[in-house]
Structure formats: structure tokens, C-alpha cells
Length: 119
Image 1 (cartoon, rainbow, N blue to C red):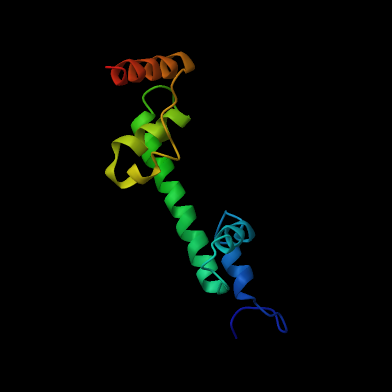
Image 2 (cartoon, rainbow, N blue to C red):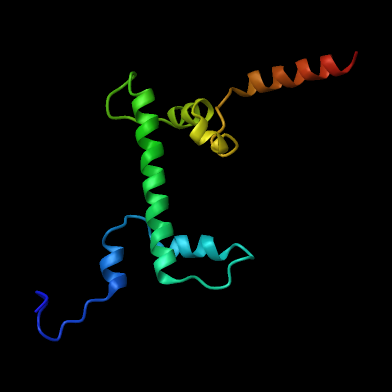
């Protein structure tokens, strides 16, 4: 006997969904948004969801470690942006997590570019 109550059927999807935090329905929706994807196997969906969860966890942990000098138990957007820019593994995220700059600094950089191009 497997330890289950008699007549109780264990669904693999129920067991798998208890091991993850991200909603598999959202991950499936994102996966289906690709024109190259026509159908998604449940095992592939679970593995993609779990891998995404582990990646986000790793990114957050690395960002927290590098930015934890300011305040304990906080993770700021700037910590994520800094890790994306400074760590080779996460550099593909720099367009998604750009460093924030003030509007006046951005406008100043545009003016400087314009002056450089006028020569």
C-alpha cells in the first residue's frame, strides 16, 4: 500500500503544483503567447515554471547579497538593476531592469549628445 487512503487517487498535477509558488496558468499563458508554441506538455509546463521560480529566487538572492549593506531585510529595484548590469550571468536583463536615472540627468545626456552631433 502506498500510504494513500483507499480509493484516493493522487493526481501528479496536484502534487507538482504544491511544489511551486508561481501560478502555472500564468506561465502557460506566457508560453502560449509565442507563435512557435502550439501545445504544452504538463511536464514541460511544470519544469518551466519551477525553473523560472528558481531563476527568480537566484536573482533575488544575488541582488540581496550585493545590496544588503544599506538596510537589513530589504531588496530594492536598484539592487536588481545593479546586479543585472554588473554580473555577466544577468547582463541579458539590462534592458528589462535598467538603472533608474532622474529626468533632469536624462535630459542633460540628450543635450550633450545633441551638442556632440552638431559639429
